[in-house]
Length: 92
Image (cartoon, rainbow, N blue to C red; front, side):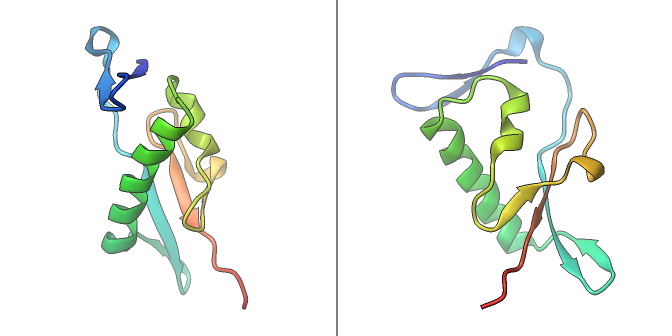
């Protein structure tokens, strides 16, 4: 699958090679569990679309570079079909 952005920055997907895939997962540490916090995940998905446009991302693997809103890519939790991003809390 290849991600294609039009000149108007509207996202288009090359459906000729489209395979079923999940959305990126945005998780937080809650005690000893990893959970999805809906509001933060929704904000991160929207910000990821902005990131795709700003960085002219065309290949799905480049999504791993996303590191905004406190989220970082977690390779050990990710699969080929689902990229997992964990929100890292900072002291301060």
